[in-house]
Amino acid sequence: MPSLATYPSLADRNVIVTGGASGIGESFVGHFVAQGARVAFLDTAEDAGHRLAERLSDARHAPIFLPCDLTDIAALRDAVAHVRATFGPVDVLVNNAANDVRHDFAQTTVEEFDRSVATNLRHQYFATQAVLPDMRSRGGGSIICLGSTGWMKKNAGYPMYAMAKAAVEGFVFGMARELGRDRIRINCLVPGWVITEKQQRLWLDEAGEDEIRRVQCLPGHLMPEDLARAALFLAADDSRMCTGQNIIVDGGWV
Image (cartoon, rainbow, N blue to C red; front, side, top):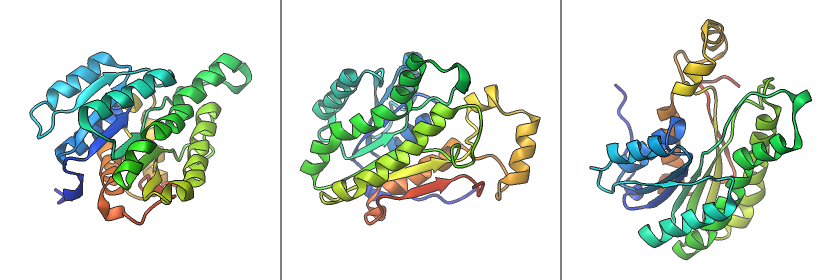
């Protein structure tokens, strides 16, 4: 078994994870809680969110789950305000929530386009805006935005998702200098094909296994915890001079 890092600077830090009830987000929540951080996570999946909060309730700081539709910016701002009132100013924001639902370009409606942008991109912008005063008051902070190698690999089947994830990289690059003046770091954590329960259920078949064996440099499945461990580094003081970067965790696929 690998010997994994502990980050003392994360103890008692105030962390928000969006889309934290399942998949990669669930792993983010668990790993930050294990580091002794105070974690609040937002999601629309209420049953899963409450189960996760209950499972981690014996931690140094029990996480709090806030049901929240991140496409509703007013609700998002209210959730951030609730975290601030409960924990104090936010130190770390993990903009994780997304949905890679497959769709047909030729059949896309304006309403579907707007919904996809709201789900995969817009909330990252406004969640970052909402925590900016907190991080300025703290003298710094870390924002971790989730990108994807899906658009880099020119994958077909989800053009709206690919567009949004490419735009996340543009947002990170466009904000790094502005935020850096206040010692706020912003980076793009870029997953490859992470084999979550959803991916196993919907997309991973024998052809997919063959593709992983053929294309990925490192053998085996890329798992949510592989992304969570990278996020811990980006949130901790160990990465104090890392900002405006794409941190790709994909087993060497792209």
